Image 1 (cartoon, rainbow, N blue to C red):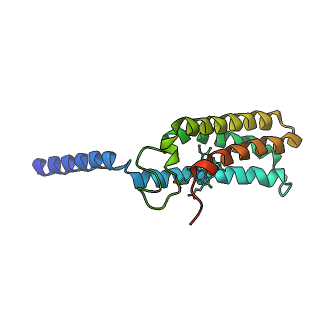
Image 2 (image 1 turned 90 degrees about the vertical axis):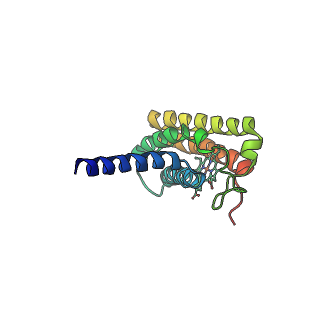
Image 3 (image 1 turned 90 degrees about the horizontal axis):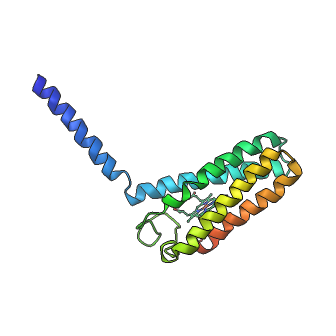
Length: 153
Ligand code: HEC
């Protein structure tokens, strides 16, 4: 009986370890990365709704901006080698990301700066300034998507 329980525990330990090693497999990283990008897109779209005057939730903008800023800290490690769109299916990350690391890094930094700025603008609480902050943020998305993201197929 004891032996059997021990065998089960040992089995679980082996599975857990195996999962820990398998978890960062390229396909999984890509799925995770796309989920993070979707979250960033969701918060950006929500802010746009306020800026366009579609909704009156100006007080929510700071929360969305903070979420984007938190996510901007993750972006740099979402692109491990081997997750480009030539070696892996179902993703749009161009090989240029790895061919031009300094340029990619600059795009990440510009995004982090724009999202930090938007947090400041939102917390200052003047809704007439939100549009400018959002525009700067949008530029930083495009500054990475244009050179580093493939067109949708
Ligand atoms: C440093 C580069 C970089 C920055 C900055 C960046 N993105 Fe992305 N984004 C990418 C890449 C590369 C992909 C494609 C990833 C993939 O397909 O695996 C992507 C994908 C996306 C997607 C599609 C996700 C999916 O597959 O459904 C959305 C939405 C998105 N980004 C929104 C944004 C928004 C909004 C911003 C700015 C607020 C932003 N991104 C900033 C590089 C960036």
